[in-house]
Image (cartoon, rainbow, N blue to C red; front, side, top):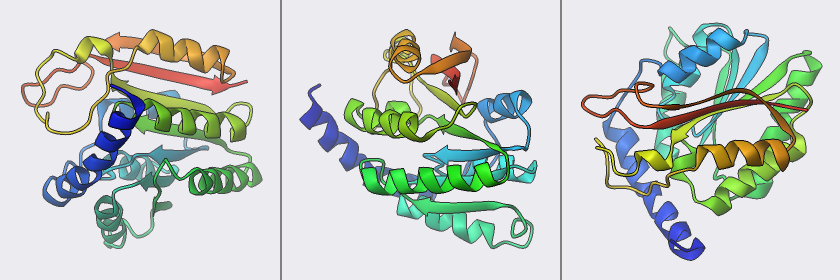
Length: 226
């Protein structure tokens, strides 16, 4: 698939995700969220990029993390802001913003704002991207990684869970939207050699995020900025 076709397909999926978050509510946290919490402390600020329904963002916040969730779906962010105003969530240290990753200036501005806030508190940033990378094309991924690499400070982390090339032929519960399958080994190599991160965790396989009758083949990467 060429860049132009992929870019069109990715943008076409915005309406799909608005409808998805309008109709489907998944509120329990993911296994990847539990893993990252087991590897970190609430002295880290979570920047949840592609936060979707907010399931993991709220889970981090309920455990004491400061959380900033961003997504390009206005429907998802609107729903999350409404939920944040519920009495049981209103005291959480969490905020949500609509950000299209293709908007370099807005993405850069919010990353800088989060980093500046955390450094004043002597905290580090964990950029959390679950099921995001395979939903964006390579050009948008490059914008994201370039922007993160240019701004993250030593000790900040990037944590990603995504569908790999091994997952392409496997059963999908939701299979009517743009999806890209990622070479996990190549991505890790790029993060280390091009973007100056050091690996903390790398794994791939099945059994990581079973949903109904779907057991996707996923990659998990956690790296730290040098």
